[in-house]
Image (cartoon, rainbow, N blue to C red):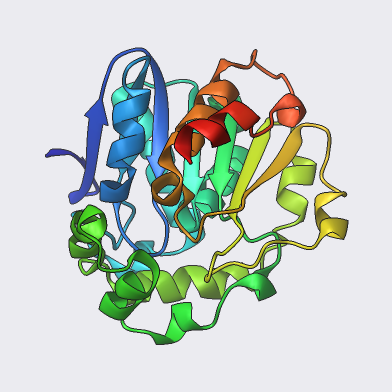
Length: 262
């Protein structure tokens, strides 16, 4: 287990591989743990980091740090502590919002962003995220398969107040404006069968700027990186292979990927 300390509090992270840095940010249900298969694939060519945000996994539980602003500050302090000046961010759910918030505040530090299950509308988030205990949220979204056991075990470490505080913060945020005002290349991924965040209507997707692209995984729920891992990893590598500043609009789910994983 790797840690850094911020103001005397422990921030837990894990790292695999060598090369250009990537940072994986988890969502409302879980921790760094469910990123392991994706990290292992990425570590062949990149140095892959995954952080536990404030209130999740083995990072400190400190209620005043649960705001979206403080979660973004955590990421900034992490980069400074490790001497990372430019990075690609891969976020999911809460981590997707933190990644976009960070890129809006420190655009010079972000080369590109791949965000999964980003709620382009606050109203798209299922109210059960607020009301269910953490253990029930984990079972609802991860199921009870052996492949998700480690992620479920990590999820129960979550301070439920960290979830609630982030959701309260979203009330005051214009989520649709984030990809419009920033110039960082953004790839949005969403599971068609996601129970937490609704797929945005086509009229919203059509309004995304040229440097943003949206791809829907038709066989995935809230965790496309687990539900369709091979497809997700291939798309991630294609996105990371684009030239710096290049629009992700050219990326598509290739038919040969689909045939290989059926």
